[in-house]
Image (tube, rainbow, N blue to C red; front, side, top):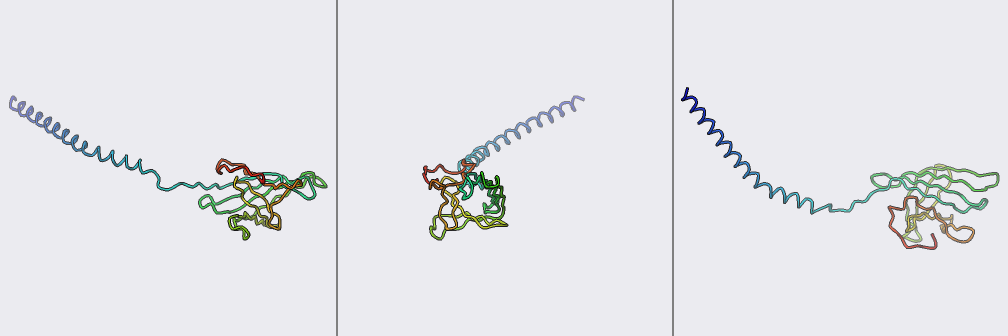
Amino acid sequence: MAIISVEFNISLLRNIYLQKVWDRHMKAQSAKWVPVAACLLLSACAAGPQSQVNYVKATERFEGTLPCNDCRGIDTDLILQRDAITGAPQSFYLHEVKIDAPGGERVNSTWGKWSINQDINDFERQLYVLSPEVGEARAYVRKDNGNLQPLTDQGTPAIDDEGKSVALEVLTPDLYPAAATDENN
């Protein structure tokens, strides 16, 4: 019985010794990988994104009162839809209410497709052209402050009774850069 006990104790001591040797070996091995892992993590964080992220604004909304020949003005609400991934123009919804029109207020709603075209008279100017399902096309110019300025059939900016140009104001100006104040807006 004493022989079994001694053999058991020797086996137990040997297992404890081997476990301690194994633990030291594993600590030494893992300690070698800590600096490598730290360098990889730091280099990944330091590199940061390589390109600027441009967000597409899928919906833009504009409001304002435009001039009218036979009324006090036209309250206008315009919504432009873009493809959420590419930013390409898709559709629009235009709601207009003639203020104090003969026979009472008149409401007109149109929808259709819209596009961005180059102005043939001024290549730096982009035209936003609304092509409704029913009715005639309309053109607007995007101002530096994000507002849309309607154009007449002759391609000139629309003006009010006092001779000032008019524009539909963008309702979400936070995504547009601040622009210098322009008295023609």
